[in-house]
Image 1 (cartoon, one colour):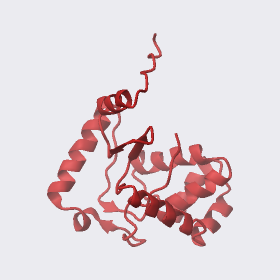
Image 2 (cartoon, rainbow, N blue to C red; image 1 turned 120 degrees about the horizontal axis):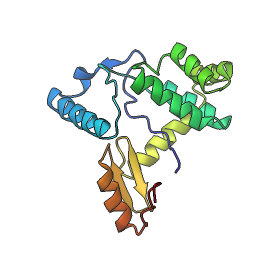
Image 3 (cartoon, rainbow, N blue to C red; image 1 turned 60 degrees about the vertical axis):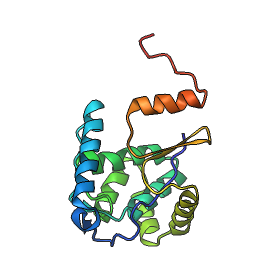
Image 4 (cartoon, rainbow, N blue to C red; image 1 turned 30 degrees about the vertical axis):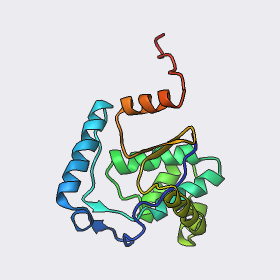
Length: 174
């Protein structure tokens, strides 16, 4: 699987914005209920934020880590900081700590983020996604044919995979 960056809300300023200014309350309540339900089914408890962040610094940091062969570690630590710890991963101090935990060159990452080194790349990926009708995250493209948008239940992925002709893997206990 390839992780492709997608800047969800590029219009959000660096300091972030309260969710209620961006998302209508009814939509927010419905989305949060769905996310919490799916998280509970997976045995997770996510910390939902009251402010939307501008994720560009985190995406830049992840791309820097990719160059160093540390993308998976950085990706995991970014998600842990945001969802488990409830931290603002657009904040440079948080990114320095996350990069350190992921064993990424902290000074190099900070310089890349400040210089917007991966800005053109992030903009190109967003444009490419939008051209394909992708306007949210997560987005999964299965067999270059099916697009699954948003957090969806596992059985939906099973149905899409079956349609794509992908055999179900045996469970670990089999």
